[in-house]
Length: 224
Image 1 (cartoon, rainbow, N blue to C red):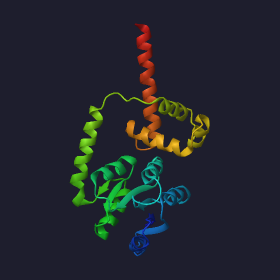
Image 2: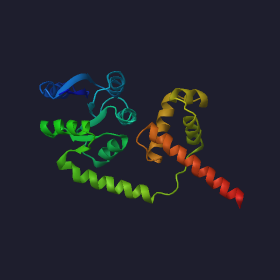
Image 3: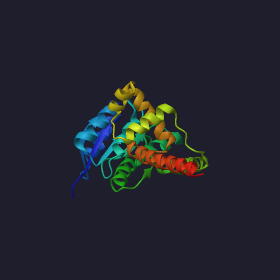
Image 4: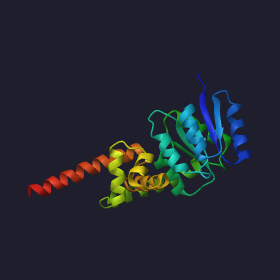
């Protein structure tokens, strides 16, 4: 059987060493890379495409954005968040960003291994003792989403969406609008929240739906 390739990213050296040892001593897995930041996670996913990436949520860089970017590739690397953050809001945010697992650092080694197995199989895994709390938070988030009114974008957000629909990269958008690339990334995070999207691809799909709805509304008005 081909081992499950795993990458491990955590900025706490002792924690990282322990997790690396856990998977290196299990023949079911092959540790292909390790890192200590969100940027490391992104580079590893792009260059090595491991089956599963286990990463901490609290480390240098925009981890949630990285989870979204990694998850934007269907059939690619699955992400398991391994974190000390016990707030259900963090779990909801990570899962909405595209994580397939949320394992607390107080969990047993068996639970982390099970989380990686589940993610590799395409299933979602949450630390059992924490799962009920997260499921309830997800239910509430879903109800809020349904109750939300029409989505309204600012002028700048509409400009960015327009350029996204033309296939522009963040860098090209920044140059075209005369703003910093970091500012574009911040707007992308806001757009993901407003459009209930987990990654760039879902932002594009939601933006296309908005454009069609807006066009239909304009045509309806013109007919009357």
